Image (cartoon, rainbow over all chains, first blue to last red; front, top):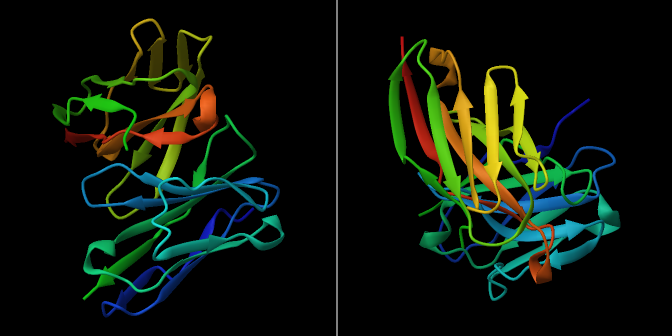
Length: 113
Length: 114
């Protein structure tokens, strides 16, 4: 069975440009997470979905970041406009539900120049 | 914001030795998990221990949890060069508005020398 699939793996954009990341979770996993990870640090939660509902988006910078999970399956995370400080690895993860182990994708490494 | 704090930040040992990493957290939890991240690779789940459990084993891994001290430890026995990675503890909030939230610490970088 395929794991969590993210695309693209790498993205280089100029500042002020928009960018989007896509995530396909493991089939049957109701919980989906988007994390941001800076070099040498632990992942920081951006948003958590239970099915199609965003149950925790308190750390999502809503002035420039948006996310959606249509039909409670795959999800997209968008940044518009991107800033230099957004350069990081964006990780998507899924789990069967609350309080279970999370499975992570390989991440998207974003470089804003 | 980070919930857990790992200690030490970096650990360097010889192959065959045991490695112990500690994690402290601040709020009530439902469970605590440990993950490994190799250079250039994704995060991989290692083990989950629930708040009503005190110790758990998985192969060469041993995890303890002390909820009264809000701390956990991960022991890797007979370490191998392939164990070289960053190790993160992550807590799942046990109540309140953050119920179910999975929060990571800053990690411990483990280097195992052949």
